[in-house]
Image (cartoon, rainbow, N blue to C red; front, side, top):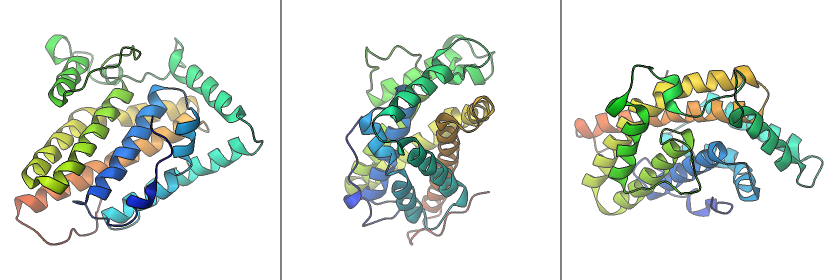
Length: 254
């Protein structure tokens, strides 16, 4: 997990095809991947402290506010303030316990973090979610850390792939419009073919098990963020298809 992100290079130039926008996307995906893959440490906590600013900068790039995502970020910000009110590092211990009770247990109160738990149980063999996402990681040239023992369709790994593709989009925005378009297609396929297939059910499960908890709130934020990601990518693809080279209009989403 990187140190506290410096937003100075992300709050300037802001458009859907700017490197700064993809830097923001990479930072958000990286932070969310850490939240679901590991206990919150000091670096992740520092990044969470900037989540509201990162959210506002991201929405500025999309062309306007999104009250739902802003509310999710505000709810997280309020909880973060409450957890740190007493000083010290008790908040990290509190979140470590919540992470363990939410994701590491066994039984009906555990919240599964793998796509295969939520999608059609008929997926098997070469069509299983774990094997399909493994092929995506291989295509991207990514390998799983030996210290990470979860299945390939774990939420943290899927979000890490999106962080990687966002970083590549940043490079392509600077150097190769053709590569940028191909990366948009890849990200759209992965969001629609994997993440949005199960994140709404995961969010509902998290909200049911611990409605006031940190992980329920970060799950709600993640769900809305992915909806917005899908919407702007589809809109951008349509603009490219129709040869629209003008500045993007304000994003609309139901």
